[in-house]
Length: 154
Image (tube, rainbow, N blue to C red; front, side, top):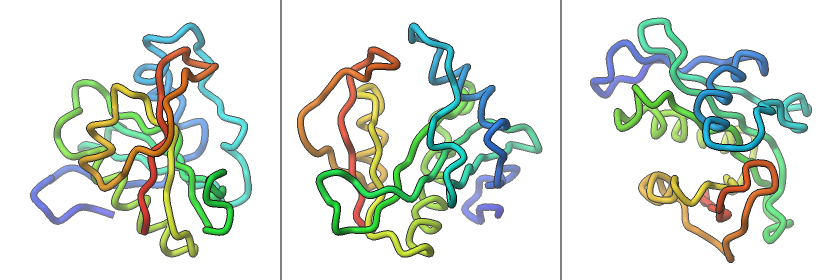
């Protein structure tokens, strides 16, 4: 899936779980006490791992898991996890591209919303990409960083 909006060289691709690990480690675990990059949900039925390549090099990853949001149990939901773009490629619309393709995937499997536990440092990104912040903040046990739940209705 190649974008047609001037981002030549970028391509959205399906990944295996293991292909997400190097970017998860470099981006999501750089400033945390853990180096654990596998998620318990990675291999659940229907989990989909999407990435973006730039001229063939993987530069971003994301994982999309069919899972209802606790506060919206009657709406089919997809949880976004492991959203990460290499620092050298941030600010180029790559994350936005992943969100759009992932949300299209969520819609295609009947989801009414996408949600994530987002780092507070990334809240501006999520707001820019159609998510709203819901509820109180919390410190994630694994990363020990402040987070909020974010939600995007489809």
